Image (tube, rainbow, N blue to C red; front, side, top):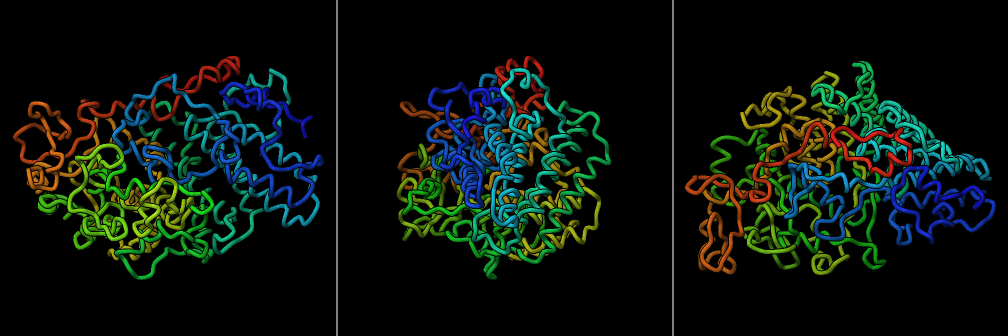
Length: 620
């Protein structure tokens, strides 16, 4: 196996920007094989592919191998499913997100770790034929390899745009590095072709018990990729910014929408999956995300199981069980949930509800998914402890809520260890679920101008679980002057809102903002706000004997010896003032640059390695 490897060359060749480390130069592909005749059996194929499920966990202390799938975060402010909406209009931490506020620097340009995985996958393709055994069994792993190569290329495309398509193990000559980036369409079409092969090769499944890829996961991912690219090209082209393919045709964009629709439809018509419900609209949505074993769950196509006894766990519940976690969901997100009878939450109804903290979250008034995503007072917080009447906006560190809307989704309130200790949380990492398939289908059909009835039928199972009325595009149409998507059609607006609500705090929002070219509507010049403070009963708690008496809140000015510890929008004397976490650090709001920040920069080392064949992304 070693004679085929020259990892140091590969690291440069495949554009991994971290320097070669002495102990890494002699490594074989990152598998667990010990035979000299590599990939000679079905079992060796399985062992080799295991590395791509585990990603960075097999990296043995180095930092050049990417994680395959998003997992749950292990630390406050860390990356992971529950926290990956941070920096969008859904969630904010105390620390400002540099990507979405225009503060990202060229010196922070990311390395392209995915090419190490691509190289190892290409090695698999070239040696797969060596394996003896059942071709049916062996082809499962060939299908997995096709899926993973598509997955890594898509990750690169989202982050830095088109790259160089490499589909074989490259020789060590310096000249092979000196090639340009491919077009977006070539990368996307190659990704979709790999996924078509994965669909053909992977086995069918009607549950996720194997915790391995199967046919419907590949179809779900194909719907995600095709929808991403269709909307990216459509909406960036409409903005005439530097990020769409200049030669893209309307027919090509339509073909991506059609592929998204058809892939999602194939999952839907297979009859194997359904939205999880037990008929308890006040519990079912939230319970999905804290059920420790989803093997037989009808909604979950692919997930990661945690087990604290095996030291495989995370820390989400420890931090969110304080009502803080140094994060908060946003007013913008809370406002987007419909009323319980399916209307936009606007005007006098909204203003009256906000006068009493958390009334606007009540499932009596609003979509019950809201009270299962944001911590609602009196709901269980820890064993024998309930969510207090007011949020901990006066605390510090991970005990603090930045907006007054604490995250409740993923909180294992009935697990004493999870809410007390680091790395004891076992809430699963759901990577693909049927709800997203329905949302992808609905959006693709809406963008194609398809039948509104079929769109509503796709969304209605999500509404039924939540105890909400069926979709009515006219009733739900939000034309409020402050609503960012008020100029979209009623169907597309409804689909986007349903997607936001259903997938809140699952790490999907940044991708949606980027592919819709929606930074102008959602980010630029804006600061994400929290709950109403002045004008609500929260101010009455900010006195001696009130909820905040142990650590009073000071805004605008502070008495001698104290400092301002709460920022509100507006000015002193205004009747209504909302929590404004970034008022002092982003006085002009997000400085996201729409001519630059939809893609991250490329490291200068990359440009040098390719002798200038790779050019820097726009604006950098």
